[in-house]
Amino acid sequence: MTGRRPARHGRNISVQRAPGGSATIVVLWSIAIASIIVAATQLVTWRTTVLGQSAVGRVQARWAARAGIERVIATLGRHTETPDADDPMSLVRDLEFDWTGSLESGSWDIRHVAEGEEFRGPLDLHSRMNINSITKLQLGELPDISIDTVDSILDWRDEDEEVQGIGAERSFYEGRDLGYVPRNAPFKSITELELVAGAWPEYVRGEDWNLNNRLDGNEDDGENATPEDDADGRLDTGWAGYLTARSIDSPTGRSGFPKIRLTADTDTEELMEVTGVDETQAGALMAFAETANGVMGPLLSIDLGELVGQPAQNTGRSSGRSTGRTSRNSRGSDEDAVSSLDTEQLRAVFAECTMTDFTGPDRIPGKVNLNTAGPEVLALIFDNDPAIAESIMALRQSRAEGITSIVDLLEVRRIDPQLLSTVADQIDVTGWVYSISSRGISRTGQEVEIHAVVDRSTLPVKIIEYRED
Image (cartoon, rainbow, N blue to C red):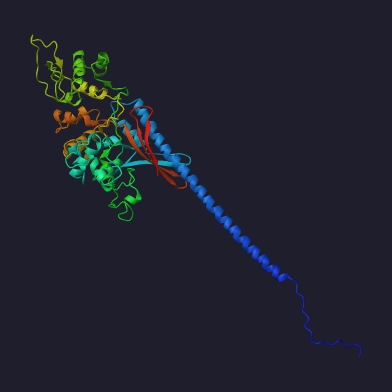
């Protein structure tokens, strides 16, 4: 029969479909993978950008901090080259002015803490006593110090192996296998003090764990982070707040010229011109300097003629010393008598002369600056007498120029010539070594702190310690 379709015989005939569905899945997966790659690339790029910005910020902060250091160095150099001998506080005021400044990329901040209080500008290390010249009695007045630790400090810095009192010498350290022995020479830094038996870091550093003379966050948070502190907004600087190993005695006079060393070969005419002494006084000063007791202090309490065994002539000019005697030679004449030094002559002699030999290789320990030392350090010098310390503070605060000579202390009621002469080799009216903690801050908020110790006793000003935090 025509027109009929052939019958199917039960066979399964497969139908071919277009491959469009698989292609779509592949495309979607490709897009997803590409998106992940792009996102990862963006993340890496963003992190790289952030790290780059952070690195740039730290560089900017570092150079801002260094700019602060250089600003202070420039001020110190200027005052060393052209000092104002009649106004020691002019340097202090200028350094306070340098405490902050800015560049196009950042700014700096220079501060320090002294006896718990914060001050602007760098720290005068001559506001502290030099550990290489402090006496046993003065060491014994430090807070939380024991007698054996005092003796051990003296044993560390002396030249011999003899144990002082209940101190510690080489055998003590070797017996405990500490890996080091006493230096038997002056301390090089305040951190070296921590090697001494009994001088634990918590005593030496107090709360100032990084010894930057600034109150950091971890030093004012109680027990949350090292070190433990009082969280009272004040920085306890431990023994390091009283002591330094960096201060030095300078061969430079208050005028900016080298001091005249009093010896038998001193230029008499120069000595007379600079100090205002007469020829007989000049000769007596030179003769006394050559004696075994030739130090500056006795000039404050003993007549110049008496110091050299010559007649002393009363000139009617008083320096606060006992100058009421008039001695004559065997012929009844005072022609060869030595006039007592008056106040102005004493000022000039202490400002421009020395009996110290600065030609040796060793640094001479520095003196305490009466214009920057706090009451606790001043009390240590004067028999632990806080009344004298407060009187000195009042004296320097009463004058814009501060204390211009140690002779000024004779105006303090509790200080007589004899007491002043015993501490004359420990005090001065200016500082030569400064500690600078300069914190640089970039425009994006990154911070870098540079800590430097600089010495202005000779020109150019030298950096003698440097670290970055």
